[in-house]
Image (cartoon, rainbow, N blue to C red; front, side, top):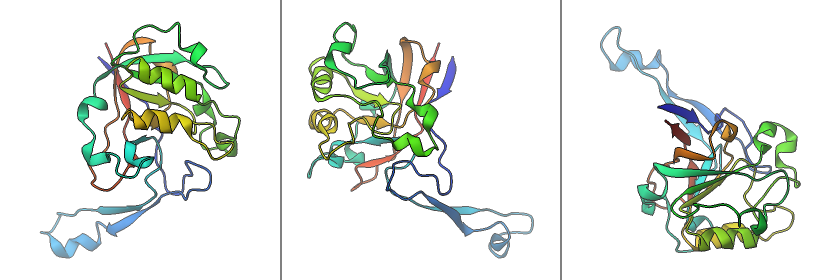
Amino acid sequence: MQLIDLSHQIKDGTVTYPGLPGPMIGQHLSFEESADHYAPGTEFAIGTVTMVANTGTYLDTPAHRFRGGRDLSDLPLERCALLPALVIDAGPGPIEQSALREIDGISGCAVLLRTGWARHWGTDFYGDGSHPHLTEDAAEYLVAEGAELVGIDSVNIDDTVGGHRPAHTVLLAAEIPVVEHLTNLDRLPAIGAKFTAAPPAIRGLATFPVRAFASVE
């Protein structure tokens, strides 16, 4: 079995989404500072991180879009771990329902939209409004077909030109988790992999970074 990492690294100051601050990674306790707390030769480091929840590769729960929606602590592992992955080559433009209608086997799968946009990660162009995204009718189709989770290797699953976010609205209303900012989807087969993107169970938070990965036999 091969494990394939589908997550971007989170580094100090790295901007994930334009307009949101990058994380600040530091130390609460250094090895040197820990010397007074432990026996000679025994030392530990304790780090700190301050960041917005939408950092790196992350998962959205319904509470990201809806007041009173289920948050990270309510997310069943069955919705984000060991899911059969269905990888769809979505191309560079908007992902319409017509592009999905000939795809079999959506029900029960993590539908991963492979657009190639991850190649722009870490550049100013990554957040450009021309990024690939899922249209409202395509999101409705994935709900109707029984997708368990939907992920994309782009800056946003929605069109970010304007203030509407129909893909988030449709998918999260159906309690289908959304994973954004994936990478390395080009290393996955169309079918046959297992997908995992499990966040910590934090009460009161709707979104959090994940270590997304796939297992391939």
